[in-house]
Length: 523
Image 1 (spheres, one colour):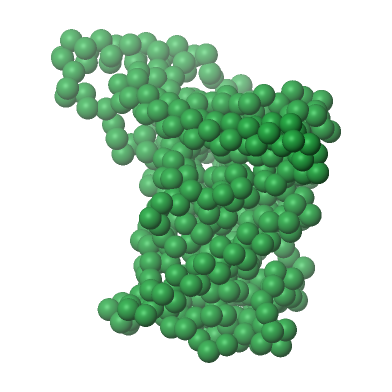
Image 2 (cartoon, rainbow, N blue to C red):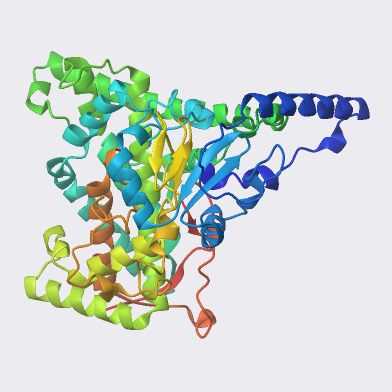
């Protein structure tokens, strides 16, 4: 995917290991293929958006840098909110303002509902048969409908509330236990485990922790790393030999096989339980299923509300979507929110005062109460504005030529929406680079696709279906952490600015773990 194309330049092939003859042959082959590719892929003489100078073969790949969302935002200040780039041989339009995205989506959402082909997703997600990466069509429409109605509906999300309550309570106890000998905790690692345990219990019925380390998370860590990479041959076909020479496809397939074996064993366990239950005449009372795997198997067996056939691999692909998004997006959002509150102690105090006042009045913290915490929810919105989990969203691909703000863009063009740049746009947000939760107090702006200046979960037909599941966990976890503890930097870090450096991937995390001091608060 586009967010991590910079990986191409961080690990160029070790040509010194090749003989001079092989080197010359590869060079000649590359030049010949370049000439052929450039001839075949020449763009018609259209009125395209402004474009920076490009290199032969690479196009604008070299412009992306180590953090593409930031590099593209800087380019947009020079070439405008709509830019035309050539990423290798892939024609690409980058949008960096709310007004540009609004015009694009309001009039062209249907033409941009598809995804570009991704060899990485094909390997990791069973031929891109999941929800996030599958191309637009009948299959995607039906599978998304299944997810919205049966897996991620408000009722279903609420039914998992007891899981969130139990797992967050375990987190609080772990922090308290740690504080008896040392009040300093690695909050980042705790949040990763929390998010993974919650989603595993929701998906599989139980978690997979072993001595504090989750087997599922270790597998998903590799999955996430590869999902954020781009095979060179996708963008520069004449350099496709590079993917072969580095062995990256082989490593991806190995990771995919490990995940497949893991999920297959879980599904078989569920099938066995269901079979035994049916034989004993007990399973009929649980047709809605106890977890996401049960629900998917029930839909598959009864063809419920779907005109497409769901095979075993389709179920696995959808489950992988849920596991990745439910873990990565959730812990990333909580981590960035806590980091911003630590950086802004006055904001931290206002949020904590609200949380503790509401809870002390009600007597117990519940998810319903979290919805009423206006300042906490404003702080979450502000974090989504400054740190959208997937800053460049998932790319789209036009299925027909479109007209946008006077430009004519041909079919087959890749579209990248820079949600990070939009959140930092001075034309949309006052003091855009500052954390100011109060900007959302009394505001109708939300992150559910109705306001083009705040789109951390995407927009239009391809908006993320799991917003409710993610935000329920994010809000409840933050409220609980802020209710029970006073947070600060450890003594060794006090007086120093908190490092907010980013590390790039399909989602953007803090480069360094968030290490904080947690002091229990009498509540």
